[in-house]
Every structure is written in structure tokens, then in C-alpha cells.
Amino acid sequence: MLVKQTAAITNLTQENSKSFLQKFGRAAKSDLCQEGGMLNKQWKKWGDLDNQDAVERLGAVLVTMGFSGDVLSPLVVAVMVIIIHIGLKAFCEDYSAEVDNK
Image (tube, rainbow, N blue to C red; front, side, top):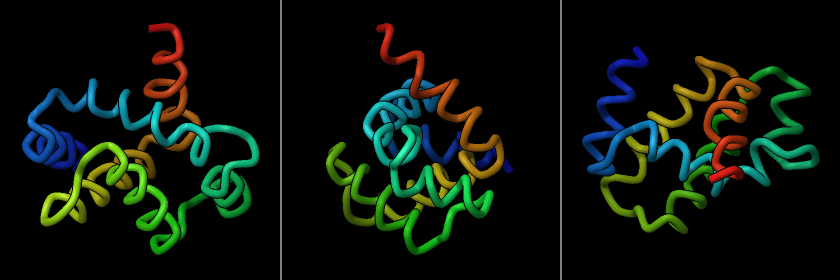
């Protein structure tokens, strides 16, 4: 499943999925990775992301990154699958924390 999601991200964004996820992680950090962020609180409480909240919040992050239209929905789904599959902590450590040092 992650292979398909990674390929979808590469195809939709026209860039390497790892570098895209680093940019996304940086953009989503306050809501997703930092203590007090709405999606961070939700993850800690339920161990998962509510689909509607995640689509709205992560979709908004992607719009601010310049994505819209037909690309937006499949990109949100691809990112959500990766985050849910590898876990929030691993995602934040791999894709959000390291961008602060670059």
C-alpha cells in the first residue's frame, strides 16, 4: 500500500515523495506534530485521525502549498495513508523534525 501511495505522491506533485513529505511535514507541523495541535491531540486521544478533520486540516495545508483541484483529494488520501501507516510519531520524526535543521 505504501508503494502505491508514494508513487501517487510522486506523480501528483512531480517531485520526489520524500522531499515532498519533508515540505508537507514542515507545513503541517503545528497542527500535526506539535503538542497542542488539533490533529496531534486527536491522535494522542484516539490513536488515529478522524477522516473529516484530517481531510479538512491536511487539505488546507496542501492548498497553502499550492495544490488544488483534481490533485487535492488523492494527495490528501496518499499523505493520510502514509501518516496512519507509519504512525504520527515516526512521521513527525522522519519528515518534520529533520527539516528544522536544513
